[in-house]
Length: 271
Ligand code: SAM
Ligand code: CA
Image 1 (spheres, rainbow, N blue to C red):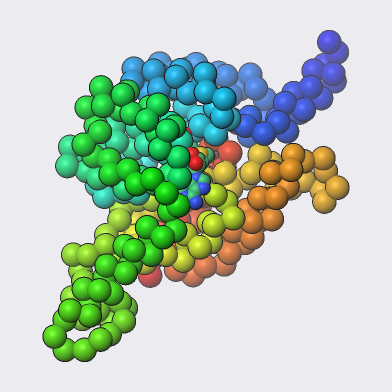
Image 2 (cartoon, rainbow, N blue to C red):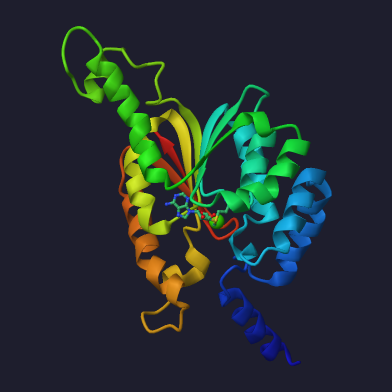
């Protein structure tokens, strides 16, 4: 193969959905995995990665380098109370669970329990299952309920019926869910990310971090309008573009977009 053929076949592969790196070459990505990631990957994560590799939807899993990144990030920010939206077989969930202290918590949501249960024996064997509160079903109503808890709490205050916002200002709901999460990993239905964002900004504490995954959407964010994209890539692309613009314009957060995995945007709540 000539060097230009090899280059164009590499570019072709980089356009494939599920390619786990946005680095300039596959060889560079492989180097990173083999030098820095795999040698330090905990045995349980390796086992879960291998189980997931045999699953028909393995394209959805978090890559090993991103798992290592999340694990490091959670330790750096001393996260204890976290949330994950989009679990699949649990690779990012396990990376999170291993990073948290023994009394750490993860509220984990997915519409599909079956896939979670595929990874669960590995998570149990790793001794971290007690940190996980898994809820099967769409995440949005769960977020609404968490916020509603605060409102219900307010209703039972003897003085008045007031909004959750006022409750917070009066200090009534400090121990409730509002502002209680240190970290949230969002890795599910891209068309709902902005709906999640609206709620998560109330649920995460000031100084806490929300990480939105797949924000470079397989590179499709810069694809020309007539580019031959897979149907679902094309469908979600506009939502991802909209999300990226909205996050960049949101004064309540500081942001940083990293080319890890398929692109991950970290949002630190500042207001
Ligand atoms: N973080 C996972 C990992 O490390 O393997 C990958 C998650 S996968 C990309 C996306 C997941 O989101 C799927 O398991 C899917 O069932 C779930 N999902 C899709 N829509 C959802 C929704 N409305 N609420 C919760 N989960 C949803
Ligand atoms: Ca993802």
